Length: 544
Image (cartoon, rainbow, N blue to C red; front, top):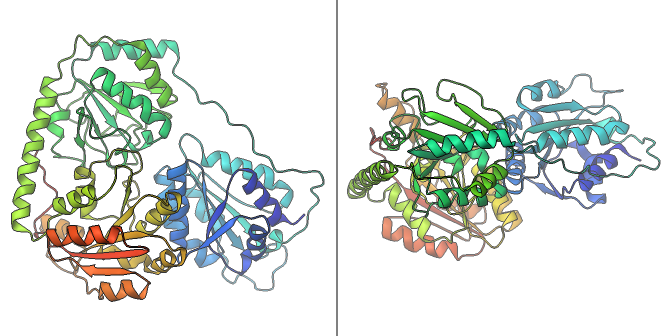
């Protein structure tokens, strides 16, 4: 049996149905095996995009996505995507090629130590040197990818090994049974219940790693059953429906956020799914509040996070047990939290109203218009920029993974992949990608992939002809306003050249609403260009 066939049969046994790829000549045996065994290969224009799409597949399904490239520069181009998956808890398997390792006529041409390069940014990285080892290698790689702290893993398949025939007489590819997750024991349960019973002003903080389907149901029940006010990190949005009266907001800033005065009144913060990888909000540096860490994995301690209690195990089961326990809430005094939260929210609305008067079209208006044009479970994917913070704070989410953003690596250029993957997995939902002009051109070629796949989606380009966030940081830190301006192409013509069926420039808020409504019912690709101007000293409001 050919080695590449063994690897593909393992993939198929584990339920993998597609691979995102920029293949090369060293991968051709593997590519043929994909075809022979009926695994779809989606060819993209950039290796980063292949990994971004695989990682988003992992985020939305919980099962590892697979990205393929070959050796040398193809492999080095994958590094940003691999780091994005590794920091973001997104399960992904990256497969790269390599020159023949037994006998090569090309010396060291294009050869770098790809495995050594990948090891610092993956959980598991190995070169396959014997096809008979593939079943155990793939089992270990898959298990590493889907741990409760999901990871990126890397497999290198050299060209000569891929095409080599090995004796696998009687072997059949199978997937091992799933293992049960650990659960909170009775002693920990009683201690946690006593702590929550004595808390007068508890506050729930939802972080990214609570973003699991099995968590949403019982976490929502916990909030409503015990009337627990909650707020979220940027990547924790959508785990709990933000229309609930207990929702007090999303923390967008590390310090001086409008929520910080509210957080300071709490005597107990229940931090669900916390990891220091996500850019944190200040919880305890000054206030020394009692913090309970509830997660699948132990806390990593740093200056901004030092929990006084840790409950490690299946998050969904933990909150199911708490709901079953019928905790006594007679000690509660939540009026302070809810009153102060309402005051801070009113300050925010006043500030945003002042922006609407000074801008022809403001970010709050853009966000409101997008939300009002989408169903509860439609999807918005964001790239990185100043607008990402505004969306996190102002775009209401009602279901998990309906606002896709990255607050871990916070890389640029991932928006194509996130939006495309969301649309592939959710063909009946509307998908909008929002991107700044500074990042649009970074992976531009994959606009052609959107066209090739025939995906119906809308792209909104926020155009201010600069690296806006960096420029405002530059000025805010008293550096010269220098070097951040951009000269952009004609985005309408650019979009049309990539097959967009509708592309237009927006003039004001009313015009944006009309054109967005039209774009969302137009088949295939629609692109709206929104000229936007941030005042030079502008940054998201710090009302606290």
